[in-house]
Length: 172
Image (cartoon, rainbow, N blue to C red):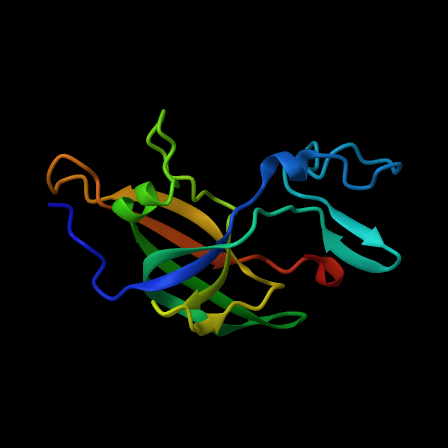
């Protein structure tokens, strides 16, 4: 018996495509990768004055989950103004992840990983409940398997999505 989600929704998740992001983002320009060689973070590109992140994502997918909101756009006062602060924890069932091919067969690791982006939350009929404004966006900062004590298989994956810190000039 592996249980089930109590109050299911569908999370629209855009997984980070690390291979595409690592490719040359500016063709003939000075960059050779979309990652900063020192900080291992995606670089911010300047396209004719419009700033954009070199981040590349896989097509978004809808994954059954349970939603636990920690904070959503709680206002944080900064010396330079205000900044909303959001944290959402999603609970995924490993049975759903396995059915969708989101578990690595060799390692058993979930394929929802740190730096994946939460796009939106839908009801089980697919109707939009909440879209996540990007920027700043909500990105997975912790991915933790849970419930090893029930039966012979783990049941749940807890994924914490946090807002990214604001960068200079509104960088992505």
